Length: 346
Ligand code: NAI
Image (cartoon, rainbow, N blue to C red; front, side, top):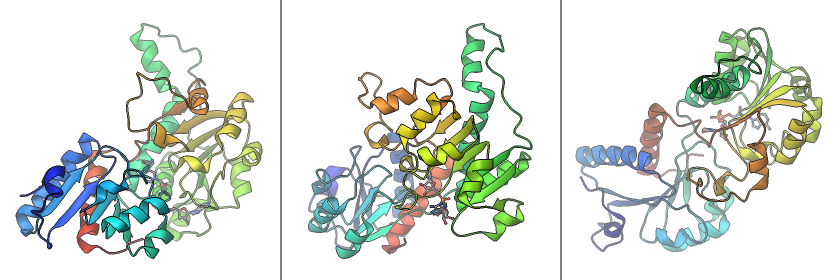
């Protein structure tokens, strides 16, 4: 087994047949899982993969630390823009492996130009994110987060805790790929009527009883709208002042996909006017400044984020939709497989 420290990975001991991989934006819980996978691989295969784990993100300024590494493993908030890629190319990097599904943070054209392969983990337990989506819906609806605190303080009053019965309600699902489909499966189990919007329709979704409708119809008829499409030029701020105005008053909006899908300024206006009755977010447009780190001793400078946290009907989690033991193991296995194949898998 040779999972070496960063220092060693930079040393001259490297054999050309070995792989040197560097991970960015890692946290101890991932380092343990990836190290275990690499240990098992190195023990069984004989090929040495050397790994280095950085906690800091990859961006144009930190990319120089990739010198001597063949593969770079990145996460959702690493900034793999054209400037970063230029430095990676100069450092001799051959492969960028995303240990996540979304790849909006990577300039794919620049990577192709630099002849650097890009891979991602397109499917890892979509149920993991779907279940977190339902956790947000149920917690917001039944106000579990408030009830928890009340009961601990000896307050058993039910005032302000009234929810609504999910059974029979119409829920709009935007994006019916792997995660959207898993959400629909759960929602139909709850007895909800599901309307969906996706440029490409899926027969499995129809077989579950969900109905594809134009986006405006979905917005007009759904008491809960949940986002499961990727962030791209077409979907950027798909939830904006116009789309919010089309929704029924008091709608519940859930976003576990990518922060850029919603216009936060319009969301705040919608919350103030009570057009939006509940908001559940696992992602935030400028989350890279905040998420995955402890800022509890600092003054958070993002006034929009801070305003969002002041509403009693807003629940925000810090991009933890993917965060289960099973999903992390699947991510680690698929990322390692991608690294070994070295292929462009987007
Ligand atoms: P997927 O690729 O299986 O499905 C995405 C679906 O969205 C496709 O059916 C596609 O046709 C559709 N779509 C594309 N543009 C659209 C548009 N403008 N309007 C409506 N639908 C559109 O992706 P998957 O695995 O279901 O993931 C969805 C998103 O969830 C990812 O892109 C990622 O951003 C997010 N995600 C969040 C996680 C978290 O921890 N919160 C973890 C994993 C993924």
